Image 1 (cartoon, one colour):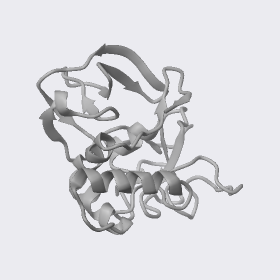
Image 2 (cartoon, helix red, strand yellow; image 1 turned 90 degrees about the vertical axis):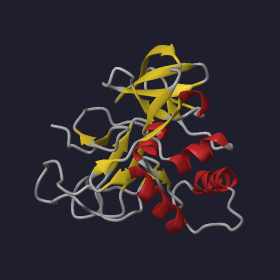
Image 3 (cartoon, helix red, strand yellow; image 1 turned 45 degrees about the horizontal axis):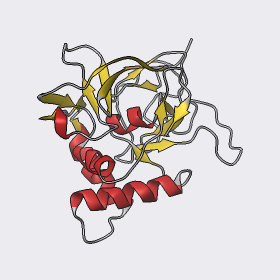
Image 4 (cartoon, one colour; image 1 turned 90 degrees about the horizontal axis):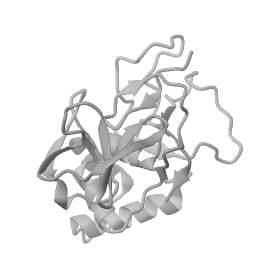
Length: 210
């Protein structure tokens, strides 16, 4: 049976056989190492990371005594949930994300990553609940994730279309919605996406794209 360690765009955890393109964590362990049940907590700290699946040959026992390993369909999903690129295993992407975020937010100083984590923490959750943002769909950058207008499911925006999200990649296309959208991706990350950060996408088959 798969562990409930897959992450939806709204940040919630669920069980599914799909592993996805990226590994991640939320700053440490928040699961019970002796159980395989859905954790009551949602994080160990404000450091929510998106990591590569393989790094320097390291091998881990998933949901053992270490941190709580999480898996994402792709980086677009991880960003929507409120994660950011890891500075250790994805240094180039982490620096590119920070530079784009600085341009988007108009920052004059280079923030430390804990400062970015604090910004994202305010924007991604209200207590245990996902914080959403109502914004005009026409203004959203590629890579933004929204709730489907009918209220069920998630849509990733790319060009003139919206792509239906699944744990295995993207399915049916529809025209990009018009008017106000319920946005999952934190505003700081939206700014980074709008100012040059290009996330890794899963294709309809789950293969990576840029």
